[in-house]
Image 1 (tube, chains in turn red, green):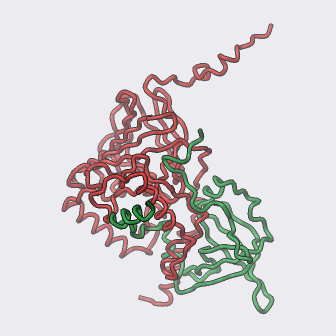
Image 2 (cartoon, chains in turn purple, green):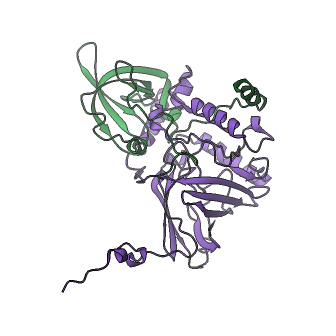
Image 3 (tube, helix red, strand yellow):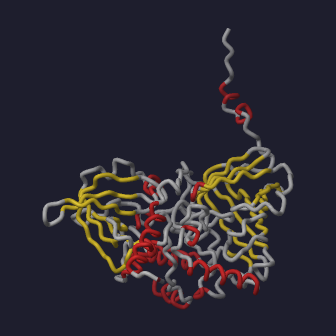
Length: 306
Length: 139
């Protein structure tokens, strides 16, 4: 006798061991690409939102400006813009709220000032990086070293390409796979505490919980070497994910770091469902540029011995 | 209406200032702005690797000898997402690369502008793409 499972049962997520989410289903592949900048441009001071017509004009202007196929005639700028437009995958639209910055608090749309201590640390780090820029890989940015990418986070922000992340969810954990540098965060939802204070991680230690239908992810224990817009090891990052429509997720984050910033700040971005797949970004595998940068510096050393 | 909008935009000071065009790597540290190059070559292979793809070309010199060059591009993820495959740039394709030589003076350059010899863009159709909260949805 053949046991035949009804097709309707086979199609049921429960049959396949997937959770039926009482809180909210955040699963899917999402894109956060947008032209809206983190901070409000200086020329939009006092203008928190666009009208629809202004947003359309702004989008047109930024897309034209971002087109790197338009060369400036300046060799330094040509080198800095790297390569043709077809390699880039930036957003082309302002955020749906038509806000002129992703930062919603402070209301002026700008990062709060660094504390004197935070400013001193940022200055010292910048000076060290300039002084040791080509001594070895340690003097290069974490992105060039394929360790972290500035927009991959946490927190996650749009960048020039790979603006995609995937959320996979069970009752016990949420996993966020970010295409940039193919980072994966496994976030426990079991109420367990953060790791001990002396344990420091590149992307911090994330713990999640539900606030109604919003997933809240708290991240602490950041590495001393990680700095997000001036943050330090004491950053407490709170990310909130809310499914606002079947195709939209509201992603908000608050940075609370009293030793780095004079007050907490919050940004908000609506991300949209997008087609997969997420592609692997095996950064170390083909990172010839690191060798090229250092080889270029050694060639210069030979020409101009110190 | 158009004039009105233009005036409103001007009033808002919407002449956006230049944003940083950062790619994965500081190309300024890797390539030399004082060494511009324009090479006409034949593709021998393309490395579809991250963080940046590399296109290998053979360039015929005036004396008949051939020099191999490597040309740095961007992340192949974007090309894949736009439907390009490893067959999109087969060996034997003639291309023109306008860019800058690497600072270590090896036969490497950035592919600042890559076109076919007749001026057509190498990968057409990707400019200005990118999802947005309003425009890119699978529904």
